Length: 497
Figure 1 (cartoon, rainbow, N blue to C red):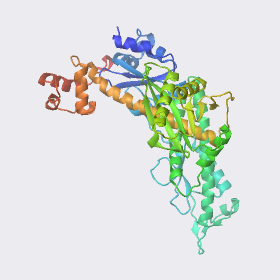
Figure 2 (figure 1 turned 90 degrees about the vertical axis):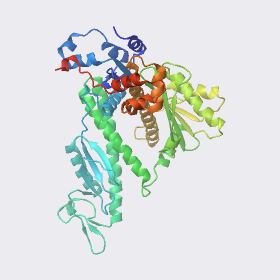
Figure 3 (figure 1 turned 180 degrees about the vertical axis):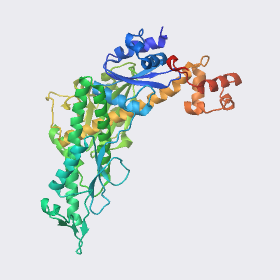
Figure 4 (figure 1 turned 90 degrees about the horizontal axis):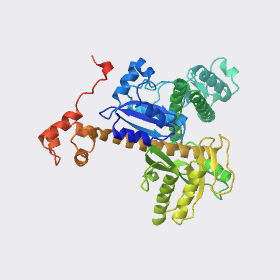
């Protein structure tokens, strides 16, 4: 028989995609998995052993160790696949074998500190002034692409040895290649820099095009239940997204690069029929923890750039349970009621992660607080469809539209911020739940311990004498706490000697 609390948690699980974390009696995460239906998948672990589990000692040992679980609800199976990989990399559970290796794919590095920057291949990314593109899993295709770029843009690769001329110009090649490539072979550093900028723009476009292709391939592989292939593609997507994000941060901090964010805002304003380009944008995302705990994130962009001082995180206060529409109504109302009370300006554009229902909830929030909403749209992720709150038809912009790309960056940042919040709360919950298994330690004393030491890690390192300093703890109970938190883990039966 499972403990009552497990039965209740199983009953509350949604029949939706998500990721689950299995824990042992010390509260440690021992396995992370994904599910098309959290309710069906997690419940199967607590059913009588099936034949396949008896044939696989590792699975049997895992099931014997499970005493609790937590879960994250997500919006789709591909998102579950992505979150699963992130959590496995974060927690490195003992019973997960996939995604723990930090694969090293090829990158293209352009060192802008050089007078004549060259395009080189590397597998390591450093925190320097270089620009990086990739990673690219197919090295042969990448090398062909660079060879094509050398002819198309007149750039230098890693094998080039340019020579400075007496007049300060540079001779790029001193062999037959100077006749093969259709660009002047003798150039100034400034002229060559323009070639580098053009090539970088091309290569970044190739990276984004490849990223979109990878996402499609990953989704198709997951749909075919080819999860090993999907997971490998997912790892490359993660790495490529990180590289592109760092490239964008570098571009924004480099005063020599032209400003492109105003162009994206202008394109977005024109596509949405706004009177002026939106300079300030805010985006809301609703997330779930363990199927019952709903949180929300809001990110703020100014002039196309993240303004993290104006990011906000929300815990839902008006109800308990899963209701994305009610949650959206609450957080939108809280955000803009406060701005109105403080006489602060509303953003030029509010973006809701979701479709018609989420948009309706946001609009209802503005009506409830007696405020006229600014420009308001939803972004439905499946087809990147823009939803309007009025009678206008949904809008699908081309995937390379700069306005849509700005919305995608905004929405993806809201997802990232929400996931970070989820992980923080989950980590705190997991660490603090260890004390729940210590018999005789009530809620008041547990709270006193955590208030005194701050977190479970400090408590674990405390001596008996230090624990006795907490009100309500004598020498016997203090010793029991210290012994309980520092006892060695119990091996499953199949691993006992």
